[in-house]
Image 1: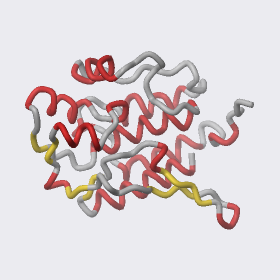
Image 2: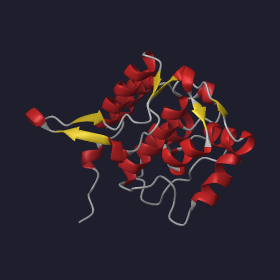
Image 3: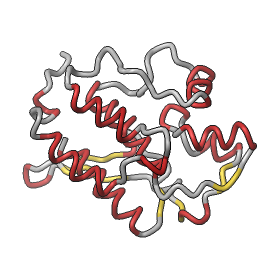
Image 4: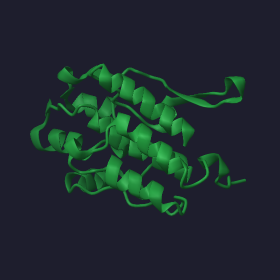
Length: 186
């Protein structure tokens, strides 16, 4: 959970500067283990953009965001209007943050269940559906509620901010041992 707070801190820094990261997922997080402490660092800033310049087009959707981490408002805007400006103040990053937490806590590579293809995910996002809880997600209801209710809030203006996530993750980490204490598959 400490590493997810590191990611939230990095997003808070970017969002404070008016920058959306745009491609958050576990494969874009590096972990530095110097001095015995694990620290998560964002990598691959190729999709980062100023909030005022978020023009979504077909090429952007295909090259930037894998549909599995894309927020409903970004997908709906693209599907319904072909393209359009999205001024979300970093809300799309926070949806992807929730997806990334699912990846980390469930120890999965994808935040949607097996069998969900791009069409199924796209239809779910158009209908404002959130990803369902994966069977491999640990029995940690507080973490699931944080992801489901705060990160995946359907109204982007009501979605948790990166700054708020730092504080809430601190409290959440006290409700359950760190993710490192979750049994690993052999």
